[in-house]
Length: 348
Image 1 (cartoon, one colour):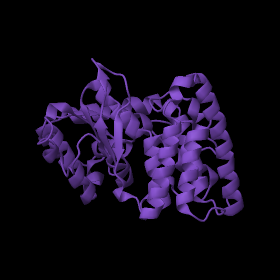
Image 2 (cartoon, rainbow, N blue to C red):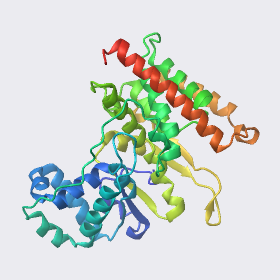
Image 3 (spheres, helix red, strand yellow):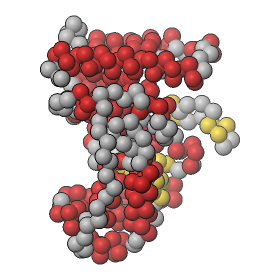
Image 4 (cartoon, rainbow, N blue to C red):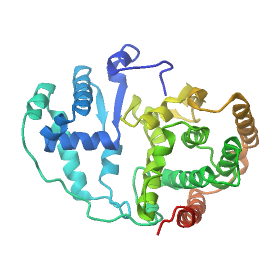
């Protein structure tokens, strides 16, 4: 988001930024790969592609002495399936493993990769539920953003499958109206994903796991997608709090594409504190709209933004009121999705 050119490697990034200015943020799957490597290295290195990628990442971290933050990935990986409650035993185990691993130098990690060992992980024995409303109430790094993100993903699934609207461009403008009028926020990561999904990008549908065959698994897939779409906000805000350029580390090509489509143009600050949100440009080149569709969507989005220009001067909704409104919206949309799945997909 902060470098306005294509970067192919950490080595290349260090030619633009000093290594001491960079902060890596590991996504959930990277944290899982690393903990599995520590427990059972022979299994990890048997996956040749994964091991090559992990080895290069670990070597670059040591070579350039880059700061690593794994808090977001660890937290998500240690939450229960049923209500998103933190599993403290699993959390402690995962943090201790990653801390031990990153205390090794690269040669020690290579020696560790030759071991044949296995330590039984702490497992989540809970089961997926058909509703995530209780999960919204769990305190977490994601908490307030999840009210927004879960509502957006539920609505987007319904919009995507709306057979009464034949034009995908019109579906996109309907989705923008939903963000403005019902969610009452214009979230950039959700707008970008909406454009990718509705314009027909081949990777976009996989985020919401359309092949799930039960209500519980499908709703959980939507929930996980909603978690993913909070990450652009959670990672980018570290620029303000930690004064380092945050770099998100993931193997998820769609999530990379969403974040890479955002390019910061300006950030206004007052001393040590940022007082205005940054001005972000969107790279439209990955969207599959034709020129007529793109113009329709851009014009509609611009009209919405014009109407909302002075919105926060005249609106006095408290955070509690906003969350309560979004909580009710999530429940309504969740029930609408389950009804659609039962009537159109044959879900029990």
